[in-house]
Amino acid sequence: MNTIMTTIPWRASAPLVLGTVLFAFGLTGCKPKTGDTTPPAGQPPAAAEPVKLTYSIFFPQTHIQCKTAQAWADEIHKRSNGRVTITLFPSGQLTKHDACYEGVIQGISDIGMSCFAYTRGRFPLLEGLDLPVGYPSGAVATRIANDLTQKYQPAELAGTRLLYVHAHGPGILASKKAVKTLDDLKGLKVRATGLSAKIVEALGAVPVAMGQPETYEALQRGVVDATLCPIETLKGWKQGEVIQYVVDASAIAYTTAMFVVMNKEKWAALTPDLQTLFVEVSREWAAKHGDAWDVADKEGRAFVASLKRDTFVLPEAEQQRWKTAVKPILDTFVAQAKAKNLPGDALLKDIQAALAGADGK
Image (cartoon, rainbow, N blue to C red; front, side, top):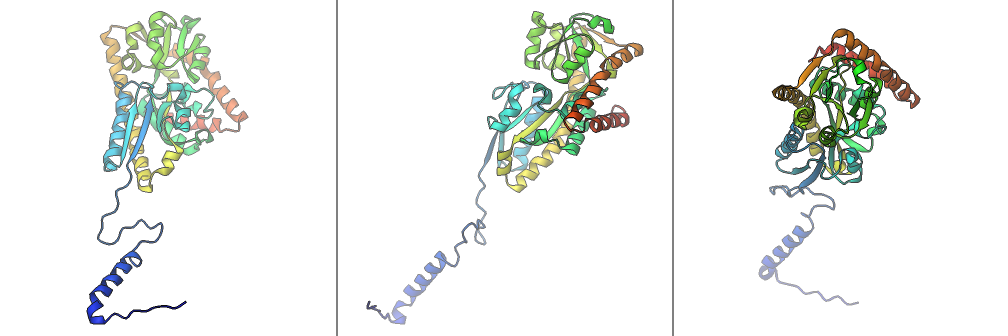
């Protein structure tokens, strides 16, 4: 094959040749290698693709815990310089309270908040966080729940990325009927979920499983006679309007631990700096949720007082009767956890030790 070469005089063609060489160099020498996203020197980095996430939460928009969750989402948006936008769907719009965790796994929502207790048996070790051991406040319950969840990192949470846990203040009995002794509970129909249903049984009452969203109407219509709950629900869910008595049994005060989890694929898709941001903000907000529970409890007490409901604190002897009645629940939890090769005994001892040193703070 004959090659025809054309010689171009240098003086006449120099600008053309130089331009050609520079153009070719621009296509080759300065072109980033495949997979290299670093921009040439002097050029600003390409804008990251915005991250948009959905957040399913069963609390109504007016509830302090929903407001605290919204503040968390807003803080993520702020500190990410607008790179992450999280849209809340309150009142179970995306997934109901008992389907929230599975909904996150399936991608129905990217993030979800609900109670471990709403899917009984799904979290066999973390059920222990709800035991009736005398929690003094939401701040203490939340701190213990986070510390121990981090310590044990149970496999039951492996389906999602756990962001943080929070837990309400001491559970009380709110009733339409007067309850002053253990005997008054016989046959009483009490709304309860998860482990609290076992508390109701141990006290001689009849547990009726349902979430908070259904409780107001159930009390109003007489489907249940009472509810086992933190006192904040009497205002936060307006249940104080449909009860007459509040019974304070601090010796067996339980909590309900709640998760905030994220879909694992959505988590993995975050850049490392955003993952770090989520961890940092979540660590801060766990404590804020605990404090919010205590603020809500204070408001709940004030709301009940404004409605002129009767509040009865069990005397020490009666407190001990109730404590003795629920002791088998602790023993059963430990035995069942052991049967599943779970460290239930160690978890319970850790909770009790933390409570002994908490002193209500």
